[in-house]
Image (tube, rainbow, N blue to C red):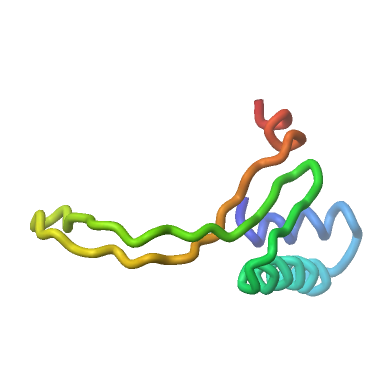
Length: 90
């Protein structure tokens, strides 16, 4: 499902305009992004949890040349599905 398809679903189910549906989705995604950028965790009960994880620096290889390279430490977003989502997918 794309963002456009999600907007269409909101338009049909909530009887709102496309502009309102798009703004709603943008606000939700912006708030999740802001929380994660601060290092906070976002939990949507029954759906899942978004959180930030730190990856340590490590050695890697360029798959084309085989040359060794150093992969720097970084912070990455992670998502863990909740029970409701897992049960719906099974």
